[in-house]
Amino acid sequence: MNIIFRLDTWQEIYHSLRNNKVRTFLTMIGVGWGMFLFVSLLGAAKGMENGFDKLFAGFATNSIFMWAQSTSMPYDGFPKGRQMHLHLPDMDLLKNNIREIDYISPQNSRGNFGSPGEIMNRAGKTATYTLTGDYPVGNKISEKKLMFGRYINDADVAGNKNVVVLGEGIYKNFFDSGKKENPIGQSVNIKGIFFNVIGVYKVAQSGGPMDNDVTAYIPLSTFTKMYNNGDKVDFFAIVSKPDADLSIVEEQAKNQLKTKNNVSPEDTNAFGSFNLGKMFEKMTGFLTGMQLLTIIVGSLTILAGVIAISNILLITVKERTKEIGIRRALGAKPAEVRNQILLESVVITVASGIIGFIFGIFLLMIINVMTQNQDTFPFYNPTVEYSQVFAAMAIMIVLGLVIGMIPAQRAVKIRPIEALRSE
Image (cartoon, rainbow, N blue to C red; front, side, top):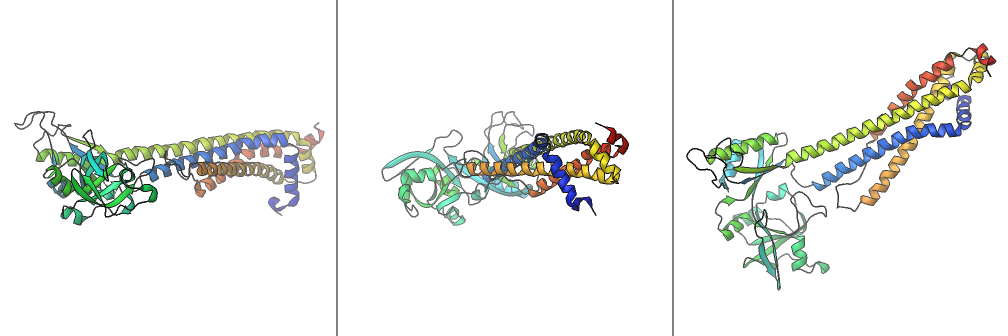
């Protein structure tokens, strides 16, 4: 009959562990602590990853923001310091020549990048806020969570309509937010022009990239008409296709604009840009490295604990020399003695790992409850994949068997005659 299914085997393991309570407890702490670290740190790393995913939710992370500056060197008869501009036709230029571009969103703004904001008023209240002219596609790059109404659509742009989407901060100032006053269809005066409110959006407390709740969005066509900007654009938000290399797209876009505007290919100042995708890759790389470090630290701690189990079992085998000798004298086979010690090693290892796992999950549950409604930092729903835990448990069992072979082999080498003579 297999030793695992024999009742006396488990009784012997129980009595062995009970007779060495303190030693067994201290031994289990090592493996249990390793599994606790493995689960809690891996869960915390996942919580940070989920937090950043939540922070960037609704935002096109494969984006490049590009704007015009001034030339830093003379070229082709043009002097240094020439002011560059972006124009609406440049969108077609870039899309037609760079296949990796998915779509482009132009924006003009007052109140960003050091420019003064725009005065807005309603019902005797006056304040200065950021005013941005946008296309409907702009909401695909940074999706607005609407409290009321809708966002700008193509008909608004085509008709140069005086419609506006307000941030929650503006809404709270101009309307009775305590009574959840519906602002849709009501008017807000911007630069002496009445705009019909078609929507109100809100942002998370933590805020997403370039998000705030004190900006009013109007159709870009209406914005350019108000400020007589013609076809000039403050900046482009360029979104690449999923598999494209953003750095290459960024370089190609600048080169196209340099060629069109007779700018030196070596001029790095004519057009500025911010590669959000590159920043996001660095962040995800950091999180991946953090998870890898967690796995390494947890695994090494578990290994140290399993080695401690081997050392304890060596002491146990020495103390049970006479007992093992009696068993051998009564006909116990070497394999039975070896399997007995190996089973003890695996039992201690697995029990320690389960206890560490339970405490680790319990800690993650506490952290989850404490951070569930917190938006002030990127941390959300810390979890651990069961496949990772099962893999760690499997490794623990293998380590328990491998490390347990040392005391098991020592037990097998005990000769019955010498064991019976030992004190």
